[in-house]
Length: 89
Image (cartoon, rainbow, N blue to C red; front, side, top):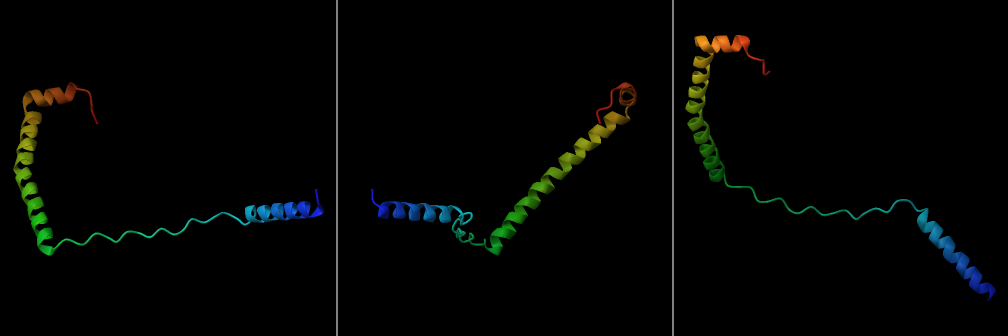
């Protein structure tokens, strides 16, 4: 083997070592996709109207359920049961 071969080989090792010591590799910056188009104001108003209708429809049912629960707690048996039952909270 010739001396030139060993010189080329040592240059190769130097180059590899320099690449390894160069520091962490950085990933290319990803380009974010464009944001979706914003909905029209009429669509937003319609969506808010639907949400308001749902809340208004649920309100009386919730109030009736609470009233039933209060009646049950305020009855004689409800007071007795609450006094001797285990606490859940």
